[in-house]
Image (cartoon, rainbow, N blue to C red; front, side):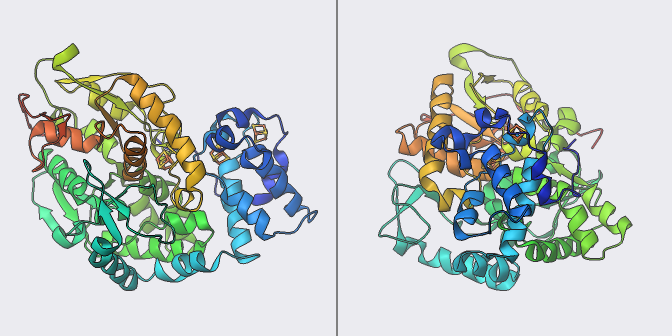
Length: 454
Ligand code: SF4
Ligand code: SF4
Ligand code: SF4
């Protein structure tokens, strides 16, 4: 399930906002800043004024529109069903072709991201230079900059670019099974920073009896370009991804990135249509997209860790953070909870505001790290108050940001895991069995069966 597709929304739909203010209460940015322009109501008023040519699009207007996590909480809460998220995206597109983007951003979104070879070369160069520019943060695997660098705050902990990128190590048909043919859409975070997550995903999907393919020439899903207003770039990327995945004749395409999944499910249809791709080809791609939680939930016993349910001191206490782009945008909330609850040796403990944004919001956390940190601090407080030893989620971007918040707030001992990390470690099919507070968690009876229904 994912939210109703509202591709027909135009930015002048902002006038349907009745200015009731309900959205302010749920907006993480308004919660941090309490300035009218930071919430959806203020943004709707500004967009409406632009659509009626009462004001011009200026640099200030751009700044107001970009001060938003695109978390969708306002959209969900609005009693008048104003499609705020889509309106803000349309307004950003209009703005990009009007007042334009900042030069650096335009260079990245309009030129670098869409040129796969150049983009890859840029990331590889970053990997070579990261030892010079960053230092390791003690007691964690994160990095902090050594000297002032653009885009990266001095107190921000970032992950290391992986020694071997995921699609460099795994490409083509990587596992042969007698079940369905499943493709893995890695996404940039998994590919460049967390290849072990992708590796875990291959193991879990293969455990269901499926054949697993990783199309090696897959490219970024294009979400940064879409949120930045560079629609042409994301359209080109959508066409490239369609082409490389089609070659494998897949039954489904699975991703472990909430943001990629939301983009592929919701936006690729209209983008591919704009590019002139026939309906049957579009449907053959978009209808096959599943988040890894949906896939594993459907796979049933094949990937569940069976054994005695333990509580209290013997159990690993985990809490779950609902990524906005999975819980809210794709309405995938029950599946990760059911998967975690079914695991022996794991106790799921509740967290306040589990579905409130962590503050990442892609480039928002780079351009507005001060606000992003405040939003993140609230998430960290809730995690700590839950008493969990580990926080589990389903989005590599959330993992990056929550880990940064925990380290900055002196709680680096709380582990941050993807659902697939947790299941993989419990099944013992991941090389790096994870540790929490010095304890190895791999002592549970492991059962890997064959899936019946994927
Ligand atoms: S909740 Fe909806 S109608 Fe009310 S101010 Fe926000 S966007 Fe406007
Ligand atoms: S999308 Fe999120 S951050 Fe942006 S205005 Fe709505 S609630 Fe606030
Ligand atoms: S990083 Fe995670 S919590 Fe934050 S906006 Fe993205 S999906 Fe939502």
